[in-house]
Length: 272
Image 1 (cartoon, one colour):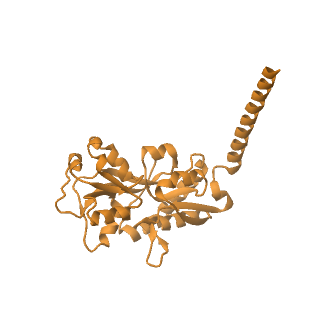
Image 2: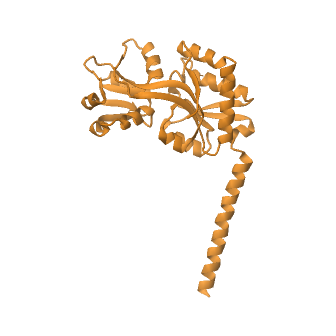
Image 3: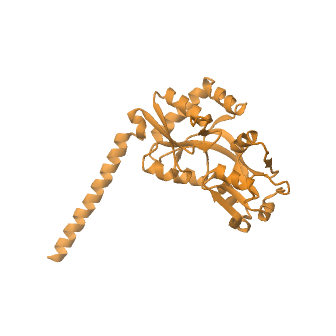
């Protein structure tokens, strides 16, 4: 009798699991891979300290290249756009919990992000550079990184590129991670680190506004490009955003936004 009850309970449990899986698939099918966009809104997650992509001006208003670009894309899609500041290291969790529809804030394309997210086409050129405030720091090759204390933002492309260096095991213990690039820059200025790994677009923008300019090292960690990150299942939303970016590239609006923030057109449209 006990054996029969056990078998029956196992069958009931299996049917329940299949039923739940079916409900989840049905929910995704109903959603259509559009997230909140199906309700007429695009919720954009961002690090609001990442100038000039998305940051606060003197009046605490969100401004930046990505803010302007996302606003224009949402307009093209006839959607309301909501910008939601998040902790950068928590972006995957924010996406999975559906608190945001996408991560759109100068996010570099990395192998890890390609696995974790559904990425848009690359839309902006960039590279990861090394900057210092100490004129004694001289980095001409990856080997020179072993001599210095290095700072960067946690879970950043800078960190990924440092880890990817062939001699990374010789210097990664000296790499310090900070919640934001502003924290890394402050650590550099105060002498807690000798050099920082940072996005070129951010480093150039920050340098323009610093009284004491930072020096750019001869050795760069590598070429880079930005993309927008969506949930794996939200391919329909990704595709619609891609279509809208292409539309505003074609009508000249993307070039206009780029020239406003960078003084030249850095916009690209390349598949990953």
